Image: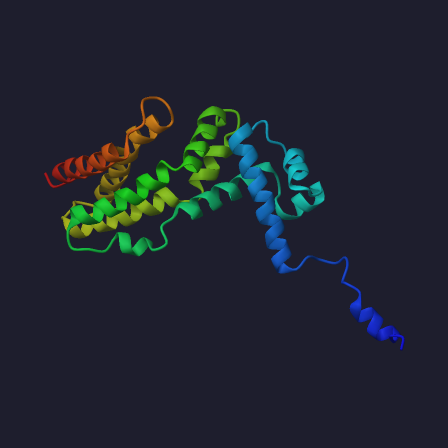
Amino acid sequence: MKNSPSSSKKSVPRRGGRPSLKDAAHIEDQILDVAEELFFTQGYGLTSIEKIAKKAGISKRTFYHRFADKAAIFRSVVHRVLEQLQPSDVNFLFQGQEMEAILYKIAEAILHAALSPKTLALHRIIIAEATRFPELALAVTQQGTRQEAIKRIAALLSKDAPLSSTHNAVFAAEQFIHMLIAAPQRRALGMEKPLTAQELKMWVTDTIRLFLHGYHC
């Protein structure tokens, strides 16, 4: 018995139209994967929208439907990288009784993010090309990750010891982060021999003790 016209239509796969939410998310992830790879291997200047679209197997129209320009997709890549590096439970880092122990947890999380291959790759791009492309540094600062860390560490420090003003706590928090990551990150970028895992543990301990000693003076 032949199928009726209505039953035949039901068996035909749906074609055309807008992609489902799942397919749309997959396409965007695919574009970001390709863009991240090209930015990290070729740099910002040599990465073009044409290259991203071609390697991702999409049209430029599909690209522009999701991202306004190259700066926009770079911002999205930075945002995704920073999200991937963020601890699953940030609040846990700020819990505890002893200031030194709390700062140690925070310091380990900060160093883990600062020394990750993707973070180092971002820094190399910014160092090499920020002069020609000011939007690179802006893409990182707009994420607010560092500012949020400074704000939370400042609030922690304010509870532990009296300060003359909130500004002093913010300044102290910013200096703590700088003390913690500046040298290890510089060495990881190839300017000196990278610190070993054991050396990093000692670096964290010594930095916290030096910071707290100066902070409480």
